[in-house]
Length: 276
Image (cartoon, rainbow, N blue to C red; front, side):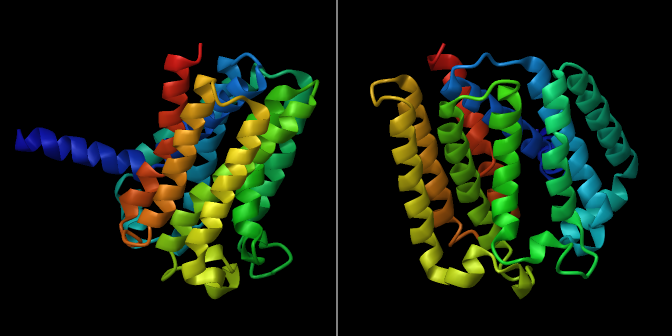
């Protein structure tokens, strides 16, 4: 029994440190956005988003390994064959899903790819290292998620509801990033100017404000008597709650790295069960 528990714990560490949960979260946000816009959920797009996130985050870790916390550096050093397999798998899934996109979508994904590239650059030049410009880091991540999960699947024809859903996703991702920045307060360089660095104790009230904005947008998109509203209202509450909880668990890596990004996954599962 003890050996089984140890094996499960090791698999959990691999799952988190290899960023598989991030890839699942992005695909889940796409499913939620599809429900909100009324568009069909396309497995090829979900597969592309999963693969591009998995391979992209793995590459990012490898390129910037010196900047990461010791747990991640040790993990990547000890599991090089596994990391290589993960990278190849992500690239294959992304390429396979990319072939299923239409021409407009294939061209459009280059834009968030470029933005993600600038996000990861650390050349020591503030004009190129966008993540080191005040507020840009958190906003850039949120915009890229919205671009990939809302605008890209909508091509070749956008509609007005996409703007509302995009705003909802952007605010949601902003909200989900705050616990990570609270956790990394002791590690992040002051040049990043993250929300917790600037607003300190007031950050949780900013998070509450973002949650209220999300609720307002959600009310405009759907109606309170629809199951989708209540499920995403729960997700909104969990996201705000994660920010408040991060005040106590700021040093707990797995709390923010797994449970926070599990909120979109949990929400997508509920939507699949109750919003057919």
